[in-house]
Length: 136
Image: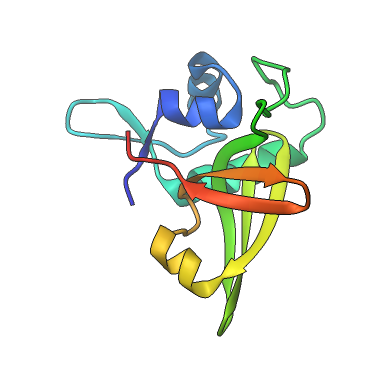
């Protein structure tokens, strides 16, 4: 799984890159540097941080607008995957929103969903559809 840049992680969390850098500097979010010196965040670390951030009251968000569009899509990061023989449960943290979807095990495997994977939950009526985000 590829790591996330500061900018991409900030968009997923709904904060500015500067806010994310401050949190990393304060030790709230583990980062590492690549061979060129860019800060990177591993997917599982970002997923855990997204859950912790959403549970904090008054989380510092740069954009207080909702994470929905006319198509009701929620871009976020997979924070949990529970796979059974036939059915799987996927949790996505999309900014302050936690979404849970039940889908087939086969779908989870085909999409390559795992903790730390970027994904988009799309909601229509009572159904939630999960799309894996294209690599940047």
